[in-house]
Image (tube, rainbow, N blue to C red; front, side):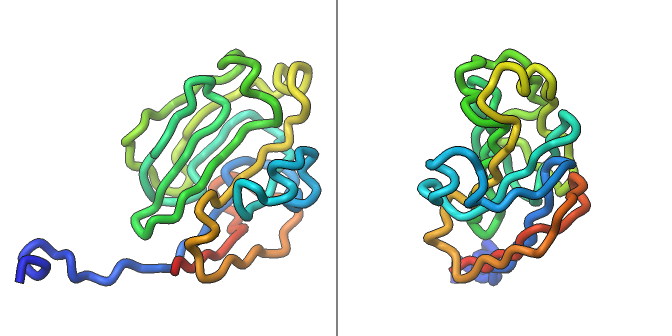
Length: 166
């Protein structure tokens, strides 16, 4: 009765398409030069070696977490998919320097909406790597994850992953 009144009986679409949040070169997760990501300890995903310093939303959803050090943003879709966009490797030690976050936790975003800008040269010179992992942090709650065979990716335009939630 209450479900009908409040619209809770609507079936949530379990399918999500994940687009490239950065422009650059696609990197297989196993080739990310960091064992935490390469060994999928945080979840399934991929990396991008960026050619420019702008990050856009790879999905429609909400900004779930903006890390205080500005090097990563967590997103969540309506069907519960959780994505971490992590700029570079060992960038937490930069303590926010070189990053300009354009969103706040709780903001609603669409595919292609700008999330943050970063100084690509600064990151290249001061971090372990500019390769940026894009991780499905709740991979264990998915039914299937299908990565497209892509090489060069364009932020907000190139579809990289199809995900079906459990």
